[in-house]
Length: 134
Image: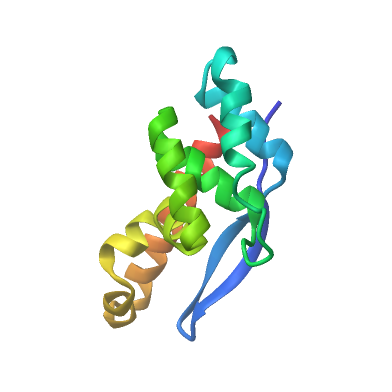
């Protein structure tokens, strides 16, 4: 069955809108099963649920997916990503969702021609979408 993302838009600045995924915990479980072994699954879910216990810890499924993506199948990296998210959830989200945008630099992006900004934004969305669809 094909997975089609639900889309939402977040205004990054006055120059463009950046696409962000709207995901659920079902998506988190599906990716966790894909990225980790059956033996690791319960540990992974326990680690992921450490994020979201405080009122200020927002966007739980999206942050949990970012942690899974950045962990690349490593429990140790997943632990580190969750600890980072508990301090500031935006750190992992930025790199996981907007890798090329971050690499170019937020200030530098504003100086680029519109077609180049859109190319980078579309490339980020494409890589994230492809990762989710695997």
